[in-house]
Length: 150
Image 1 (tube, rainbow, N blue to C red):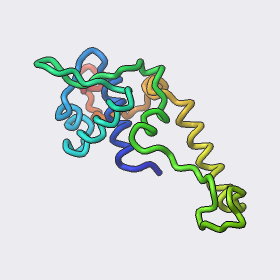
Image 2 (cartoon, rainbow, N blue to C red):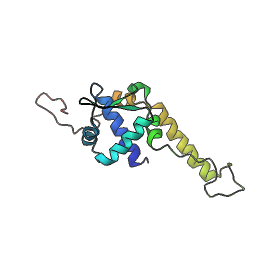
Image 3 (tube, rainbow, N blue to C red):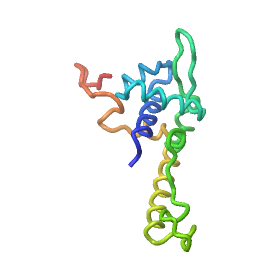
Image 4 (cartoon, rainbow, N blue to C red):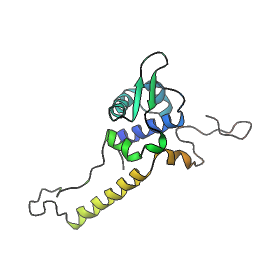
């Protein structure tokens, strides 16, 4: 399971990818992604520091993606705010184990490696290209023409 911070970062990046033609303020992103504004502010700063989004000052300023959605992996987003933790040495501190993991910790680390690989291979564009009946970040409502309204 990923942390709230990672989830919030992914929501913000997906929102910006879904709306590439405008810059959005932190408050607008918070409102659309259902993330507390103060918390999101910290997340957005991390994403800016990592070079994944940029902040444009001014009247028409706000946040936009730096990279195209097809260039941006989920792993890059996660690593910007809270990198996945791999098990590199015995978590129990057993000197005799060192970096040779026991069967339990090896299996746990192998699972983390699988997750890391899946996030590395999945881009934001992949998410947007594989629609489901639920539109990301939006309540689905049918309008009079049978289309989903946003």
